[in-house]
Length: 313
Image (cartoon, rainbow, N blue to C red; front, side, top):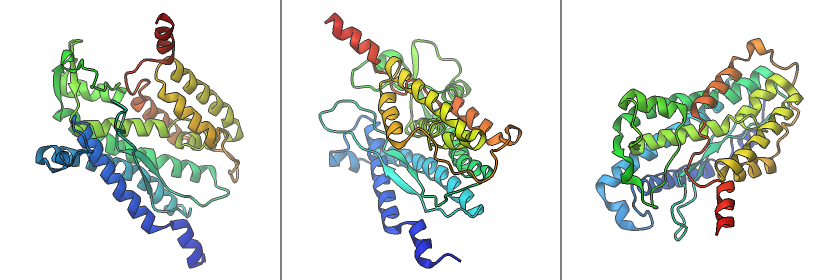
């Protein structure tokens, strides 16, 4: 039987978990206010009834997506006897005064601490996979409601430099078509805060499912390929850097972060790898990734375009 001290060390500090959850809710509210074109650094924005209701809808939906993802991990781990902490939510940072329009969604996701040195491929697959599945299900539900609440507007209405244009995943495109049909080039969707929360849920899901290192996608690939998964991880990192140069510079920052965390999955399998015929969770993860990934989450100039513009000047 584990001692009380060891059990508490795995569960983590409830005080910190509650504190981070509270701060995350505040930053999610701030992001919901910011998404409406208001400045969350001014008290008036927090006292206005209508914007606060929309901010609450955004914060509640995004919190539900992040919580579902982590609970998927947590409950699966507990069911399989893997010691796991309660979730630690990670507050988002921004907007920063004077920095202009920057991506600010109010959350960097969350994580749980797992205490295992060796694991069977089946256990690793289940714990890694059920988080994205749970988060994806809630994301689909949020998008189904949020895109229906969103309005179609002329593209010219958002030509100002203070408007942040977001890219669409296949799932988002399907939801738009379901509710509004095929939009002509002259029109675009003005996202309701609930839809924006679903969009962020797609982004978080796709990031977690990248087949790199110790991300959820990396765990799934490692459970099937074992140490050979490092080649997939290297290829994924190279592709991420290429996407950062050619499409969206933000991928370079994420690639650097993953490189600092380690691209090679540590050896932890106890027993054989999972046969491909039983790796349905890997297939589910690949499908969810394809549906939620957005090559250019925010429409900005690529590194190549910025270099070309500087040379012309």
